Length: 376
Image (cartoon, rainbow, N blue to C red; front, top):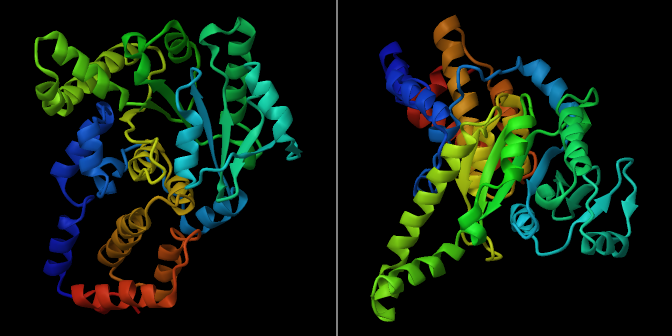
């Protein structure tokens, strides 16, 4: 391929444009993700997942060794009671079953005992939740400490600090999802949220605030329109538009408060229709990957999630095709096709990716772009 064609294609990639770099940097400084933006951008991870300047990428060999030591993506899920946390985890793992519960030593706990404890409002944050449908995820559930004691908060804080810097890689948490339900939108940010974001330094572990049960705003929108004097039929017609405005209003309110805290969230995301068993979690996976600051962890998350094979493809193209092009341009060398195939496949370990796919991706796609001249 002529150098001009290579450079032209490289410039067309998400990481090749100075303008895009500026947009990416601005998006990280202002990580507000509205419902409409999240849905619109869900099919293009390069918009939100373009690495920030602080993103660390390991040498391929070191990355392989590192990834061999951590086989599960670990998430701490937080928020007040009835925030829809379990439902989100079920949608992420594409199941309606309850999770298996394990203690810190890996011993399974009887679900009857667990449910009895939950009924009394007791959660053990050290317990690991895993679903048979996708055991690649491990979740920890923090009890809602909005009405809890100082002891509960201190236990949660200690867990976060210990597991954010755990010497044992398998025990480290990689992301935190903090759930705020919109069913209680009049008190979206309570003293509990402010206490957490002011006192709990999560270090390199990103916190993504999830606005849950957003669909509850639909009824609020209708009631607001009725209060303004509209008839029910007209209120129903305008409800969706008003619901969007209400969501934007409360998102802005939440962001303004939490961004002023000492340890603000990395990102905000509204989740809709999670009550549907077929709800799409692609945007949640995309946003979480975007919040991570290390490419190896992005690879672990994207290869573990089962929400979208498209995310696997787009991340593989973003990192591996882009790296291959830069390797050829900067070093002037032909690229080893076996190494390239191995790198691309590393984004798909939880999916059945067969040789036919690789032939189309590496052979057909690269040949159509003229890259068969760049690989050996």
